[in-house]
Length: 100
Image (cartoon, rainbow, N blue to C red):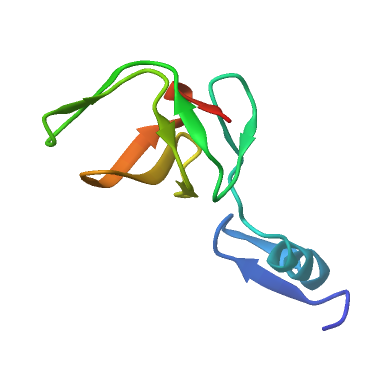
């Protein structure tokens, strides 16, 4: 494409130059997730709970200091997906964890 070519960007609803569209496609659309003290979290990190949390539907309470291994980011800036013994599909808010 030449520099004077324009393409329609459906995300913004505007016509942008082809060079800008190519640059936007090359950049990953990742969300930066931060824990309670501001550390950046990534897939596979280990986190520790900073507060006792009651798990809805499981009838169980996760105590402060509990280690959660191998988290996964969901694309939401405040939610992380993780596994814990006996609880399937556990989603935690990033404000209640600290990176280990």
